[in-house]
Image 1 (tube, rainbow, N blue to C red):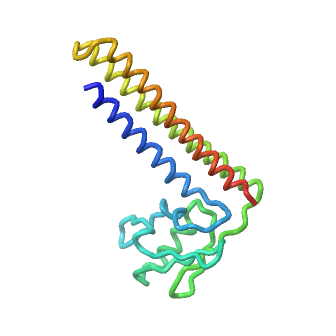
Image 2: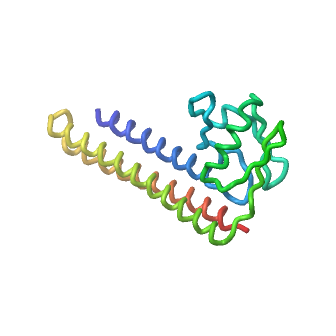
Image 3: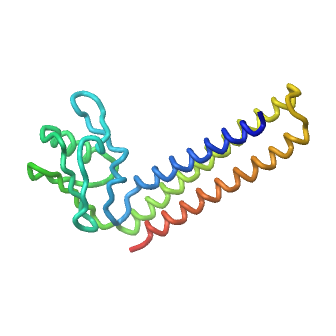
Length: 185
């Protein structure tokens, strides 16, 4: 029962880290990558559809992305979704593909993105701590119900603290890498 609780907590913490990494990937840097469009949804025949499902992406240059819609009739909808997104891009449509030129980032904009990355990292840390709290409550319930001894639960709580500390360190490492990437000119 104790091992199950720890395993569930570890899996949830790892999932929180994956979500944080995905969030970091959506933050724009000076280089073009398709991951920054993962949170863009297009109104496709009345339902919001992820852009990744409607088009293919290619990066012919460092700051240019070509978006080739699978269905040419969705080109206008994709272009509108890109304009309305918080990416700060202005797409151009040549009839076949949508070309997105990423403007070079100003120092102020880079700092805004670093603040955004720090906020997302803090959200991930909070998520990990909430998982730890719920696991600890479960361990306390196990002791209260007499399903395990206090020594076993104390050992498990120490293990839970180690798990939490490792996951927070991973989040901090990923954040530091993203900050370096953002501040690199």
